[in-house]
Amino acid sequence: MRLYPAIDILGGSAVRLRQGQYDQSTLYSESPRAAAEAWTDAGAHALHVVDLDGARAGEPVNLDLVREIASAATVPVQLGGGLRSQRSVEAALEAGVDRIILGTAALKDTVLLDQLLHQHRDRLIVSVDSRSGIAAVAGWEQTGGVDALAALASLEARGVATLIVSDIDVDGTMGGPNIDLIEASGTTLTVPFIYSGGVGSLADLHAIAAAAPSNLDGVIVGKALYDGAFSIADAQAALGDE
Image (cartoon, rainbow, N blue to C red):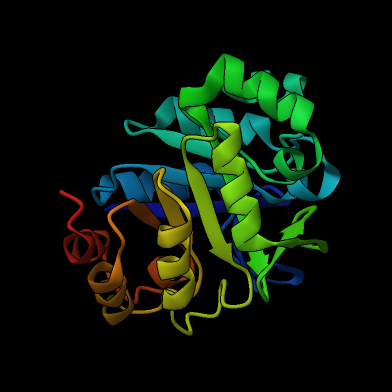
């Protein structure tokens, strides 16, 4: 499994939110590029970047900062946040990211989803953010009324090749991952998926590795890395990310 260090951009800085709440953000670096370079210098094999301003605005806001990260990175970069149109997706790809992440748009705009699956299927990830088992949309601020696992199954049936499963209830809390959600997602899906939410210790990563279904591709970690709960190298070792 791959470790995906997270870089969430809000107001031009690298932050982490607690449970998806914009008013509960912690500033970690005034330079997202510096944060990215710190992770890659420490040996990270990939980066997970989210334009939080874009997620709220409905279109990318921080592409200049994303471009800086992508141009300096020696590893693959995936980007989410505000990618809800063909134009915004193309702009993100032009900024140099390797994979683009759809959230709200994939659940609300099937025409766009089908178009992007046709054009960029191998570079497309769809994220389903679960809040109490219901898919959350619009930068985590709304719930769509759709069962998260049902949404995952529907997206795979439509042709999505890679998914992200996030538990917003534990995101940014370092209170432990939702192992039940990981196992249920592995049963629901046959395609690879990435998990995000609640990781706070190496024990959490070992627990994920022990319970991981065969199609769990990796784990996104943010706050625990920023807070120094463990190193990139130790996290990769726990996950078998060689």
